[in-house]
Image 1 (cartoon, one colour):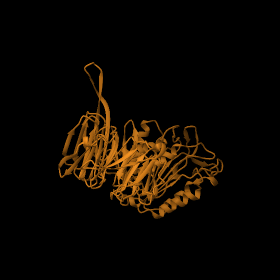
Image 2 (cartoon, one colour; image 1 turned 180 degrees about the vertical axis):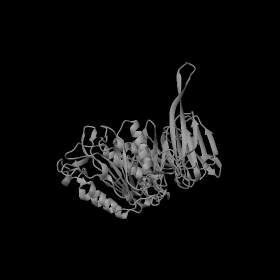
Image 3 (cartoon, rainbow, N blue to C red; image 1 turned 180 degrees about the horizontal axis):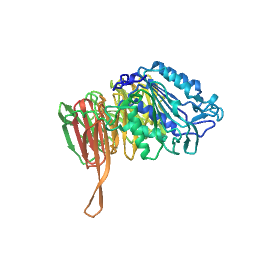
Image 4 (cartoon, one colour; image 1 turned 120 degrees about the vertical axis):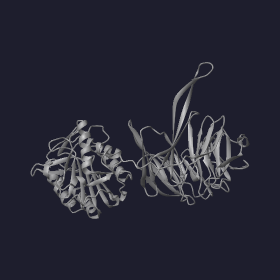
Length: 574
């Protein structure tokens, strides 16, 4: 029996077990395509450390088209027995009534009308298993009790059938109402609103959200939209059960000291791309089509050691730069398909590497990176990833399998593995053997991967703003979701320590006119730096000198360059 004493105002996610049940396709009922996204987005929200923070291994998803009543019962029974303090069971689909007994059933993919008693999951059977679970149990039912016609669920009688001792039961509609699944909508109406509430939080209810808090907010918001009224059932203050953290409660913003400016250098040409050595001793920036400058950094002092004139006759457009870990070697790549390795102090060209052979030899090289031990150089161009021995410029003979992968970026991470990423997939490669170690799917498009193994993923995008997800690849878990109301632009860089992420937004907002009266469009670039731990924006800078880019170095180093000739370097506090 649940009581106020057994429902303390705290949240311990490691003791929570969750079973998400939902089916989009049915053999004898109308399909419900929105349910697939219901399950995906609920699972993502549940592992979000700012909302639920439930370990991924504590969440079971049942969406198999071959699922039977026994499959569901066994999954719920296992979760109930292993849960510490809280069990959450969610079902979305068709709710049906057995005409013979008037019993409430949850439809399965193979449920047959008229044979609900033998082809659907009897709710009473589920209730018995849930009752054997921990002291706090939550059941969420996004369904009604008959089939769906076009865009609607058909309603039925719920009533006392949902009562379980010691459990709060939240339903999508009243006993004689239709739960809604609007045609073409991303989510069903009830689950979609529940996701919105939990993502943004509830003002005025404290640090944690209880089941009754969620119910009250759902009832208000759905009524304002003319949608069915949810119902909350349970006994002995079941509504007091805590179900997660309140996103409306903002943690105190960390005090971040102002970054120290190390250098502001003006040029008459673009200052991108840029790179730092892994030990923070050297910075390099491309300052024109084929020109590169290198700088030595000592404490808060910076001095140029290589002027772009030294390389002007040897390079075409520079598309990527990389410095060896100790800053002694500089690698450049461009649109001629060649990779050049230089001495960073003298500008002496040590060797030239052809990324591709044959008809593809002139393919542009988009990205290069030195391994953490400095022995290897990785290159990405076209649909090929290559590994080269820095000492000789020869390819790794074991590395012949990374073709046709359509990678959008590469990065060596701190354990020495090479990461190639594209879409919502990340591949890990063992460098010396050339063996692909594993392949990882992520809940969003991978935008960038830092040396710390933190990845930036695309998040929610809508007219009200959006979010950027930060994902720990090693633990395969979200570490932060950064919410914003104004699009911060593209992800430019992640700090090697995993402390910061930088975004750059470019807008055309300013028009001037030349002496002949012709318009000149001046682009503004806005740099934003976000603290990954807190999710707060801690630094910003604007420039009206064109499209910009940013790069992090170790020890809080940050550079910001724009395409009309300005580069700045700061040291952020760690």
